[in-house]
Amino acid sequence: MRYLIFILLVSILVGCGAVYVGGPPGPPPHAPAHGYYKKHVYHYYPDLEIYWSVQLGTYTVFTGGEWVVVKERPAVLTSRHRHVVIHADTTEPWRNHPHYKKQYPPGQAKKRGRR
Image (cartoon, rainbow, N blue to C red; front, side, top):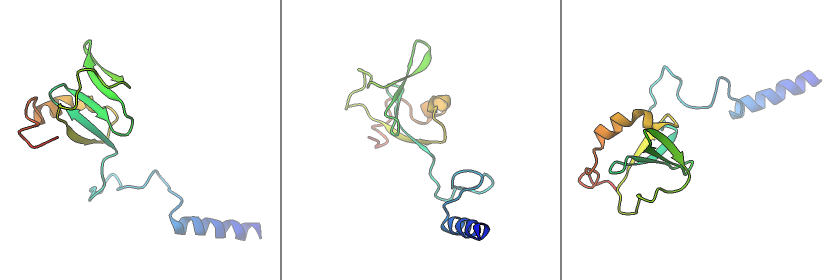
């Protein structure tokens, strides 16, 4: 009887999609994403080279020759500074900073119609 109840319970959970085998839902590594969004969203301020994590509410700034994560909004960052939205698979977007700096050069955000 216990075996039958166990089988029934597992069948219900699997049928409802409540059990994930091999990781969270999303496209498998060998398949294209087709609408699957990257996990982390950042606002990148090209004029200041600052990243703000939307999910964590932290700022990443380059100071003293290294990238530093801080909770407080940097004093140099004001509402007049424009940003671009970056979707990334990593919690360390500054590792791709040369790419972002080239794609969004300082002083160009306003000309490109970004906020």
